[in-house]
Image (tube, rainbow, N blue to C red; front, side, top):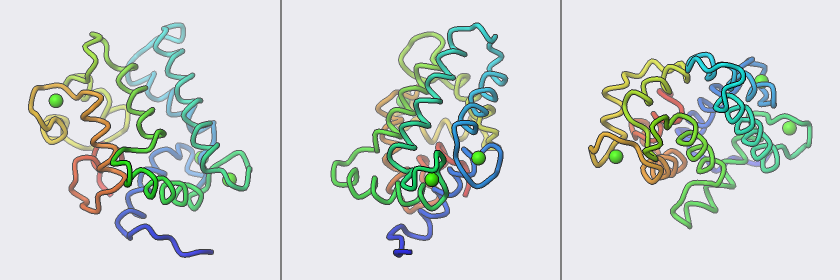
Length: 188
Ligand SMILES: [Ca+2]
Ligand SMILES: [Ca+2]
Ligand SMILES: [Ca+2]
């Protein structure tokens, strides 16, 4: 196997994200994991099965999986192994560091997220929405503290631009304390 060019820090970080996504802990990311994530989020937010947000959530998660699989599932097994996942990020980092932007996969997950939990259609995530999100992610982080770190301009809302900047930081930063890391994968 060819040596990864990711730093040890990045390997730990992307592995933490992988574990978060691998709901059934079988060491592979499959469509089933993304469906289980959707079920979990639906439960935390208390949405009925016929709620339009529930339908949207399941469609978004399925698309997110297929977008990942198209780029990462090199052996076409229908699932993404940790090594495939790390290789995928490795390739994406090279491309998007040059552009100064997060990969389309992370960008679209930010867009989906805002569309999904932005109840008041303000185009941003407020602190209360963020608290629900953390609980959906089973994160042990303190919502108040973390929100304060992520909301860099301190206006009480997380906008798409702020989330995109956090995604870029998540992809590229080697600082474990960088807010972007905590947003995507919690402590690692
Ligand atoms: Ca799995
Ligand atoms: Ca595979
Ligand atoms: Ca803000």
